[in-house]
Image (cartoon, rainbow, N blue to C red; front, side, top):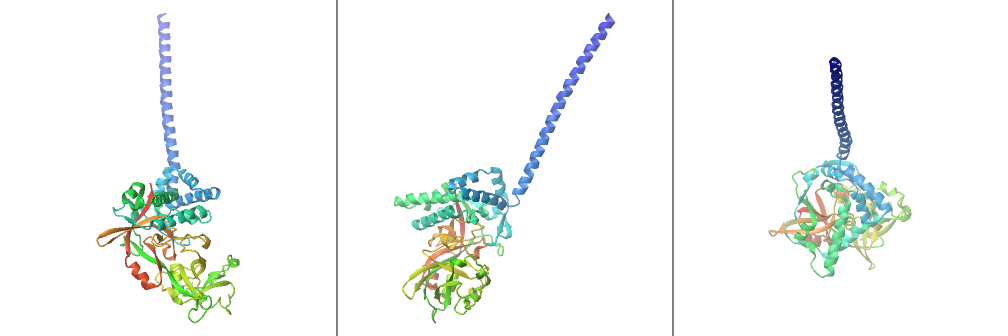
Length: 446
């Protein structure tokens, strides 16, 4: 019996031990599997994230293009800025962060890649200097309102304005630009209605309500240039005639509406046009409409400035603005009379800036308008330029509401609309008070 008891006891102890070992083994196995699954999930997550990072970090503009597509689709379906902002905010913060840290690919007017820049070396967050900001309140309000309306009316037809440009490297989006325009319009309207100097002239107010982003010039041909070159443009008044005569023998033309889809005009250089191809007896006579005949100087100034105010010999007076060109590039450094690019004009009711077609162009005002690289900087960006005069800092605010052939691409220059002048002498006297180079700042509503 003792032997039987011992055998049973040993059997019981053995079973218990076996059970304990089994339970321990099962627990260890479960832990191991859990760890393996966690590692596997982590690995899979990394596999999913890594291509995303790689894809997004190729260029900031790839993300910008996705944002642009969302904006374009949104604008086609719904035209309000709040809906645009909602669509934009749907993107994850991770995408925004990756886009902000990526290099920006600069493109030319034909949307072809030219080179890349490191955004952090060109634009950096700062504070605006403590000097009064100068501008005409009513004129700035006009340009802000007209630029904002262009976004509202033509975003679906003109996707170029939905490009975020190089400010994407600081996380700035198109809705940020719209919010900035809306806020400035509201502030100006309120201040003007209350007959007071606007708060937008106060650097403390600006630093409290806006992100201030310094723009350091990037000139591939002059790496030492840090400030922006500030060129100036104007509208000149010229006498002109409805008919060709010995004094006014150089024409400006308009493309006829029924030839809008015919690209015959892209075959001809400025020299071809001025040789008389559209005049009676010319091989393309009847295909365009003559608007006016000027002196050669009048034509070249009209082509260079984009707008001309013509005083006709019959007493009529009107603005004429460039409409479409022959598709030939403007060549920097080549004298004006040798340029092959030729513009066709239309009569307009005001000085006109940027627009994808003549009937859509933004009406602009001197003193508050900059022309620049719309594709790489962006339409509607509010800019303050700083320069020193007489030992004091001067700040001037304006809106990028115009562009031109000299700015595609161009990350080192702005063109300031100085005014309407009778002649070059008057123009030069005016711009002698303005800087040749300046420090530039973007303002973006916080």
